[in-house]
Length: 267
Ligand code: GLP
Image (cartoon, rainbow, N blue to C red; front, side, top):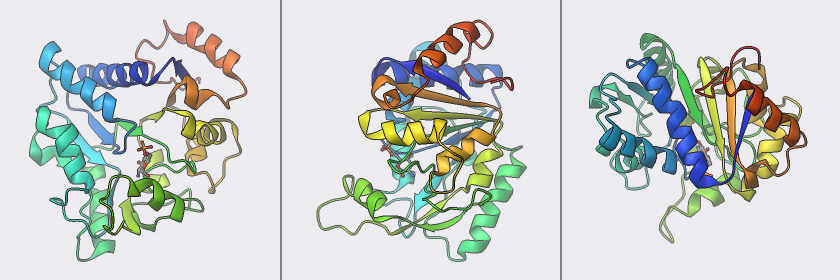
């Protein structure tokens, strides 16, 4: 793992976008795995700016989102479909036919999830997967005790995750209890992974994911098994890490070796 420390959320947004843009320029037909949630919002904003002001071309990019609430139609204002359109896709030039977000209203869920996996394979696999992290250390909606070999499927959300999700729903509006999510096995097949963590609320989750034991109770810890993971965290989210001084030194020694800050196999 390469742990990249940045001072604050604004720096995280810029650095995350820089890493993604670097990869897109390197491989214009890249397949990106994308995440929703408040953490990557600033990264999307910055990618939109790079597209508008610096000519970042996304016309050959293919995307797969991690997850979607079960039961919410793509047009639902709180769906991840809407989120992605509003905060990213409506402002850049990824062709609509290249965009994939799980359909929370699919009739045959097992068949649909298997089909989602098949489409990822058909697209050549995910080159770079962007992840946020839940307060309990989940990635996607892979809640504690999710199999570390899991594939795209329906998961029941914990009460804590539902509580976190409640803030984007209207008062009195039911918060979905389940979601379709890529599995940990699916995520681990991405060639590179970029995990974003911002704010003090994520410090325990980040510490457990990076320095704790690999365990299904903190599904982000499974990323320790992947050879090319970059963990990009601001100071608040990094505060519970024990080896901060070491990560600082690694950042300096690898800055010239890995200018795009995506970890190399030696990390
Ligand atoms: C949800 C999403 C995750 C996301 C997490 C954290 O659980 N399924 O992909 O990482 O929320 O969200 P936020 O970035 O808003 O803290």
